[in-house]
Each structure stands twice: as C-alpha cells, then as structure tokens.
Amino acid sequence: MRASNRRLSILASAAPIFNRRGFSGTSISDILTATDLEKGGLYNHFTSKEELAIATFDYAFKQVDAYFTKALAGTESGLPRLRAYVDAFERYIERPVVNGGCPIANATLEADDALPFLRDRIATAFANMRGYLMRNIERGREKKHFRSDVDPEATADFIISALEGALLLSRGMRSRTPVKHVLALLRAWVEGLAA
Image (cartoon, rainbow, N blue to C red; front, top):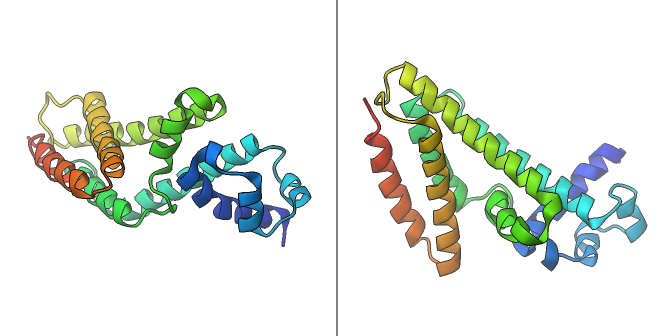
C-alpha cells in the first residue's frame, strides 16, 4: 500500500476514535489496535499524537464538508439552499459521516483550554461554515429571497449557534428532543427571513 493510501487509512481509522473519546481519552494503543500497526509504523506517518490529532481533525472536517457539498449540490442559492442546509444537517445528525457526532463541536469542547494546537484548525472550520452561509445569504439577498434587513453575518452566526448548540444539548441530555425542537423553530425562523 502506498504511503499516502496508508496515511489515509490511518486517518479513517483514527477519526472515529478521536471523535468519540477526544484527544485526552484516546491512547496511542487505541490507534495501534484500530490500525493494526506497530508504534514504529504509526510514527513513520505521524511524528506525534498531536500531529495525528490535527491530521485526524482535518480529515474529519473534510468528510463533513464533502457531505454538505454533495447534499446541497444542484440546490438554488439563497432561500432554497438555506432550507436544504437545515434539512441536510438533520440527516447528518441521524447519520454522522464520522462516527461520534460532529467533529467540530467535539473538538471545540475539548480544545478550548487544553489543546491549543487544535484551536486554529477549529477556528478555520467554523470560519469555513460561517463563510459558506454568509455567501449564500448574500446571494439570496441579491435574488430578493430575503428581506433587505437580513444581516448575513448575524444570520450565519445564529444558524451555526442554533445547530451546534442543539447538538450539545441533545448530547448532554441524551435525547434527540432538543434537536427536533431547535430544527422546527429554526425552519420557521428561516421562513421569516423571506422577502
């Protein structure tokens, strides 16, 4: 197996472990067991657990990004795409593309104080999500889908906060009910943005 293929295989095996257990809860022996590698084999591809965690987060975020790109392909920008985004997020919650839930939310909770080496990656992931939503809202305003007073930045921040917050609340309460409530209210709120 070529080195780049083996590296991807390691990331695919490690991503769900880091995503479920976090950096602190994942041991190198967990990764070795999942990848069927010896320590030396793992360190041929990654020089440290930190480097592996960063690469794994990047890999997981690319999987999430690819899911949303595919889910929204062919949907008209503006209000239709915003509706589709919320629908795609609901499907994503039911069947996450990386086992263990949203890697951005999971990493954010753990990295805030303890893992400074992941903070920039998390900030970039949120900036990408935010930028995507803002551009779509701006296009929607140009097409007259949204009221002229709809602020793309504030709207994107609210949507991300509602969706990620619903995930955390549902996880903490061990119930899907908060997500269902938030999605229903968010859908109604999105319709209220229409021109």
